[in-house]
Length: 496
Ligand SMILES: *Cc1c(COP(=O)(O)O)cnc(C)c1O
Image 1 (cartoon, protein in one colour):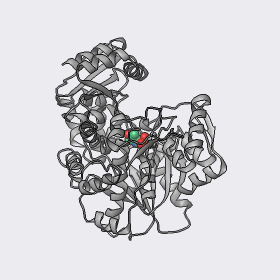
Image 2 (tube, protein in one colour; image 1 turned 60 degrees about the vertical axis):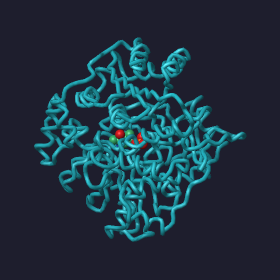
Image 3 (tube, helix red, strand yellow; image 1 turned 135 degrees about the horizontal axis):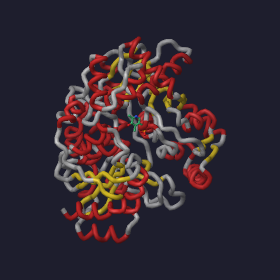
Image 4 (cartoon, helix red, strand yellow; image 1 turned 90 degrees about the vertical axis):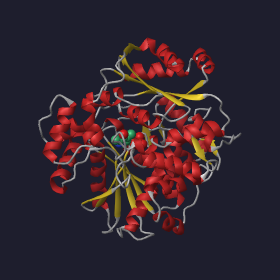
């Protein structure tokens, strides 16, 4: 299996999976896409249904990562998805809520779905270094407003041939998020708070990536810079696995018959999670419609409904912050598949230049053939969260509530009565305790841990042990520096 850049028009250079995972972004600024989509047959589904989650992961990822051996992928999948990382028997349990099937993707170490990719991707990167003959080790730099930083730290901690340095704005993350990062274990990790906001941290990291002197100083230490960005193919391919795995689990449980169509609702920000579902569908998984659920930042809803992608709009900070995005990077991969490289390149150029593009009629029809879209404002998000809790006894987080709202509206629009609708549940409600309490109409304590305890008491549902245990853990990283000093901090860590 070979990969090309979405922006390559004539001279299409091909890359191996290991190169793609190591490089993250193509040299021309495009995203890596596979030159063909592997097929999944009915017999394959039967075989996969008889396997454990790590075995399914090794099998499915192996269709794309053909330069990795089955043993390598299985050992990576076992390390990523077994205990102690995922303590429960199934990493991705499915809960029935009314007529909906909720696929819970947040039973990993940081209680959010990004663990599904970030637990395994570091192993893939570490192996990619050997496969590509890279003699240096990778130094991952991350600027975070909270969730991605912690998920990346947990994933890369103690992975061979990789170091990771995370920067976050000292007053820009919640108390629990800060505690999650400050207490991070592992001999190859570093965490530094900076004075300023997320943009200051992000700009600092970008400046380091663009700094030629820095590259040569790091080279002397036997290191090169790399990122844990969500557009890396190594983060996308593990996400294909859980859609196929969910279908197998529903087959095994007799909740659908092989061949039945399954619609899938995904709370969407960067279009990564839902695009992984699209790949599963194109591989042959019987997926009907994919429903893209957005919060008040509804740029994707407008695009799927009207064919115009217009980022020139107000940016809202919502109670589902991981979906507060106006440029959904992975949409470029869908456009490449649907519209072809030439049109895709012209849309991306228009987006960069003017902040807007409109696709033509055939492209829009092709998109609508596969996707539907709904969005949810703040009031609706909170209402749905409360309704599902009161009527169905299910405690959803705010991101999942956005998806549930879309799922319920989609279901009402269906003419067929019986149809399996799978909803991706992307975070534990305890990850966003204050917002969940507010939605339930309860008093919201100032302190994050107080809020967590309060939610636990009200719902009677235990919080993930790892979140609750944080409060009494010793901080390892307490340093706060000026954003101007980020470069020195990285160098000091590189030399340590
Ligand atoms: C990142 C995130 C999303 C959005 O996923 P994309 O792949 O960016 O579309 C949704 N919910 C939660 C909790 C997240 O952390």
